[in-house]
Image 1 (cartoon, rainbow, N blue to C red):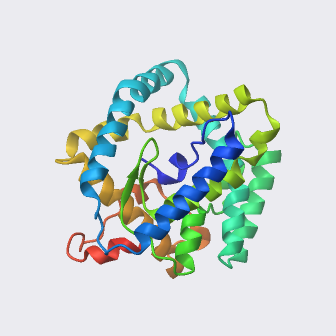
Image 2: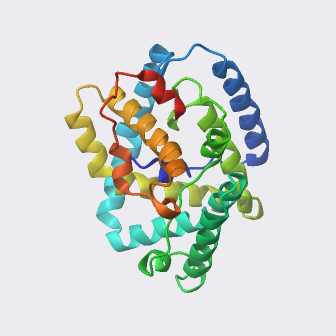
Length: 271
């Protein structure tokens, strides 16, 4: 499942500011604790598997049925428009991380995408920027920390949020606090509704991919872990090498694996 889309699922709207500050403190503490731990891609596998099982049960018995109903009731064109809207809504955060990484050119591309899609693209429902060839970037604060040399720490699985590392978890909290700040001006029910629509729409759009992954993988936990770590590693190292001008992302990034996977586990720690 695309880490770029899934990371935009927000926290509960009621009392959101206090919860955001609390989450920032908790993830920072976790980052400090795990950052000093012994290296290894899955140091906490036993606990991770338990949380992964909880998340899988929640997905199978709650999210998946809702997603199937969403796919039945909502046309693909509408789902694409909703996805475009939320991607466009997150562009200011992407721009912020471009600038924090000292990358002015991608930030200019992102500004152009935001301007074109917000105006000509009807508040982001239509991805005009991609149609005219403006590159798309996908940066977050976890990648920004990695850009400046902050280690990722051990692999962890977060309840409800899924695969992560201490660095990525802290980055997600920072991005959420920045990206969803506009919800403080909305009623609680409106904010919660927006987040719910985004979550269900993302889950519905990846229904077939998730089902195929579960069916094909001998161990879906290992498959998910390795896909996540390799995807993050490529996003960080590939962008640093300039493999993709402007940082454009392909959906195939989710399944990017190196030939030496499993031979040099320390490489996975670069997230």
